Image 1 (cartoon, each protein chain N blue to C red):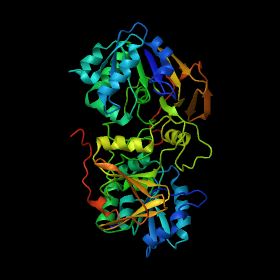
Image 2 (cartoon, chains in turn brown, blue):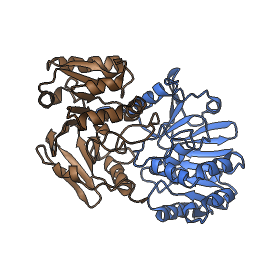
Image 3 (cartoon, each protein chain N blue to C red):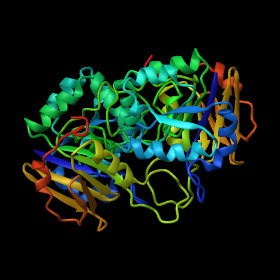
Image 4 (cartoon, helix red, strand yellow):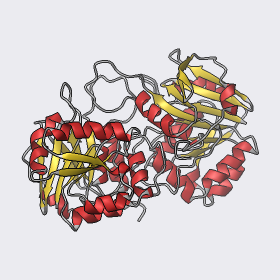
Length: 244
Length: 244
């Protein structure tokens, strides 16, 4: 299995995806055409054009799954799949309505087609939507996502900001609430970081700030780029453990 | 119908609910006992004790619905209901599992029992959960909430912060995404503000910053404390209008 899961698609002062150009080129080496899933944003054509413009620089053609007469057939024939960021509830609902969650999972897990996600597309790679930062603007049939990894990821992970006037929960407080209900590791991927999976190996990449891992049985742990996180692929997970 | 919907329960440098003491006292005038719904937080007893401590100053006894043998009967007998803040997904799931959404709606809409909500408890008063700020740490059976008002509220409404390094969406961008999918007014209640409903009258209260109203057919509009928002009670609402 080949996964590249980006925390974010845009970095300050950089063009779309430019901060991850090298790792994307490596992940998609040998790929000539990519199937792009634009459902997280409202403007599917515009979003696909933006991705095509970036991928053109890598010599990769892009087709938007929304233009296919049969989106499931398009997934079954895809040589690589990229799900872009936006609103993860809208994205999941669109995937479900088109029967694409199973189709993509099968193509990636069984056929070994490279999967790339950024932000909401990284949320999709987890077992559930439960650690998204997005507003639930529409109601998906369920929170079940692709399950390409067995643990949860929180993209755009943000450290508490000292001196903030905001009285709402910090991200860490939100993830602590998640852990109270679910005995499932959550990796907070800071902006500019990503995860790469090659079969049973999982490695953190990107900027020095790295990632913060939250679990029910230990204090949060910090990981730097290059860290081997393969143990998360065999983590024990129990959703709704408090209810059980 | 009597509603008091607070954006938040804690203000900087003030004790729990203290910033709204006067309006709460007025809303609950003549009430001797309040039924508190603590499900949004994990520690039901601790949360109920905190509310009891505040209400004690107003001469009001508090019982936690979680201590009732039959929570639905407790709602049916309640003289006033207060749903506190916390995680709105956990709250809604708990209400649904106990059959309390219908019970509370009936008690408030048909019997005229005063309802008070703060944060997640204010989310509950809307038709759906779709404009919560919370993380979906558990999956409720549906996003349908109490529907005590026909429009949506975004509690803890936060203006864009100039110079923030955060690359995620601003609150206004999130609500704009909501409006793209739903033709339903959303009132962004800034910290320290609240709404009061008395039958067909709806008024904004609280700090000068006031509230910001988002609709599909006009630019966002600002309202100051004292503003008459009764027109929102007869607003045309259409969820999932883009899908329809």
